[in-house]
Length: 390
Image 1 (spheres, rainbow, N blue to C red):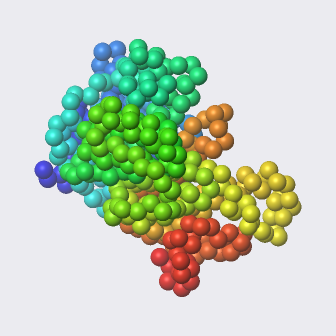
Image 2 (cartoon, rainbow, N blue to C red; image 1 turned 30 degrees about the vertical axis):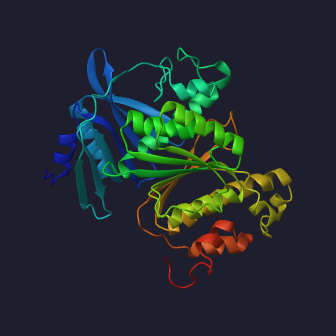
Image 3 (cartoon, rainbow, N blue to C red; image 1 turned 120 degrees about the horizontal axis):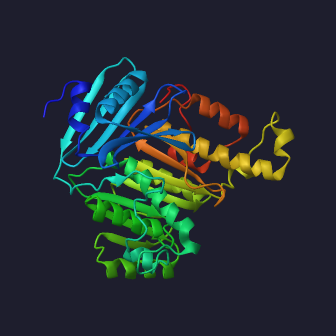
């Protein structure tokens, strides 16, 4: 199919076959960082709901098809550099360069089942809706056999669905033409590992092979038993540590949730080594920088232990994000779950673009803070480039 203009692209994809559209990469700070568009039913008619992400808030607006086409055209003119669209019969991507040049790609795929259009109301709609029994959520104690969420597990239920929303955003980056390999480092009881498999394979039809890794033998044994019971033939669990994990040459997505301290660095380094297309990481216990950070200008603040600890954690994840950008990833730091549930609520989402960013300013900052993290040592064992900027 030959689509040459933005107008033709939008006309083709904004239809009853639309599953999800995502506008991102905005070059203007005063505009929403991301816009998600999906069809909704309102008073018996189909509309399109645009959810604009502003900071940690989402603002929802419903459009008819013509108004939506005007809105999306304007967004692309205003500075959004990327539009990814999933449809029932094909997926598409539209990239806009700084000079306004458009690159359009369209990829047909086997027709998906008709997407159930969500009724528009004030009730939060989850990817795994309450009332629909899901075997692994029942066995993991999140819901009862009738699909009702246990009150004590509702935060976990929200976390699972929030995580699946992050994955839903990056689906256009995952191939439908071959098996996708995903590694979940530090999978623990594997709520999210099972959710990934169920969502990607059972609900979205991707050919995935998922490997969960954890140090605890009893946890791995239980997860393996459950995977076999559900008939999840391509969901595997292994015992071991992240730093020593070997045996794979290519991995498409790496997930690391609450891997403690330097374990996150080893997981991120593995992802870069594998040239992973997507990385989703929720760091935890960022102690390393806290033990080395030193700066005369900041010393009046760093003398307070709790402030030093929190600053070290934020700086650690900022440095990690910049190091991933230097290796050709587009990186976002997003809120995973509400602060009231846990202070460890930041998620690093990195998508491979191949466009490496300079490290000079990062190197200047880390030197000023005496902050040479494990991830830097793993990615740049000979030191960050001094003259040639990558």
